[in-house]
Structure formats: C-alpha cells, structure tokens
Amino acid sequence: MWEEFKKFAIKGNVVDLAIGVIIGGAFGKIVSSLVNDIIMPVIGLLMGGIDFSKLEFRFRNAIIKYGAFIQSIVDFFIIAFSIFIFIQLIGKLKHEKQKNDEEREINRQEELLTEIRDLLKQKF
Image (cartoon, rainbow, N blue to C red; front, side):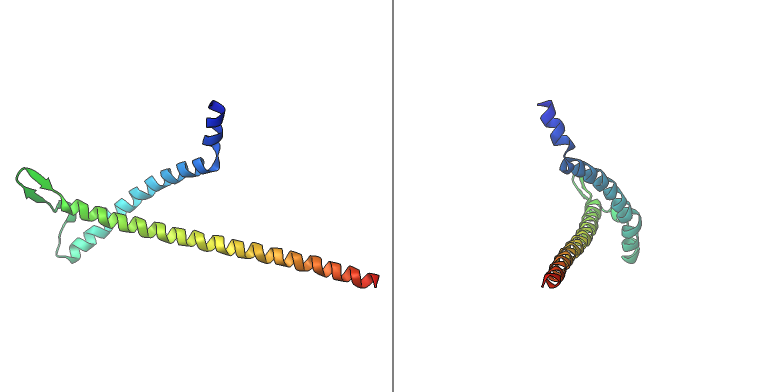
C-alpha cells in the first residue's frame, strides 16, 4: 500500500496540482492587495470618496458588510480574468508547438521521399 501511495504522490499530476495550489494562493494574495489597496480606493475616489471596506448595513444587532462583499466580487473577476488570459496564452503556445511539430514531421517525410527519389534515379 505504501509503494502504491508513493507512486501516486510522485506522479506528475499530483505534484503539478500541489504547485498550482501554492502559486494560486500566492496569486490570490497579490490580487487581493491589488483590489484592496489600489483599485477600490480609486473607484471610491471616483465615486465621491467612498471607502468600500467601511460600507455596512445594520439590521438590529447584525452588521452586514456589503462593502467587503463588493471587494470580494471585484477580486473574483480580476482573478478569473487573469486565469482566462493565462489559459489563452498557454493554449496558443501549445497550438504553435503542435503546428511546428507537424511541420517538422512533414519536412522529415519530404526529406525521406527526396532521398528515395534520388536513390531510384541513381539505379535507373
């Protein structure tokens, strides 16, 4: 059982997933800082000096912090857009690599066919 677990844990997919989670967590902190410290203050300034982090609604003894919710929504959209752009970039790079690999394969086939043709010409 231990050997099977080691094989599973060492597989590329598990290691890639772990790296992705760690980088994603760090990226989330960067985006949260971007939203909280740069974007939301500018939006608040454009809207007449509103501090979104302080926006709240009191209902009896409950405090509903809808400003923090708005910031979380902005966080989500920035992260989602960044991931979308990153995936698009990776897709383009993969497509270009596949295209280059196919061209190399075709070129190799043409080269072999040319050699065969030349050999046939020499015999006849």
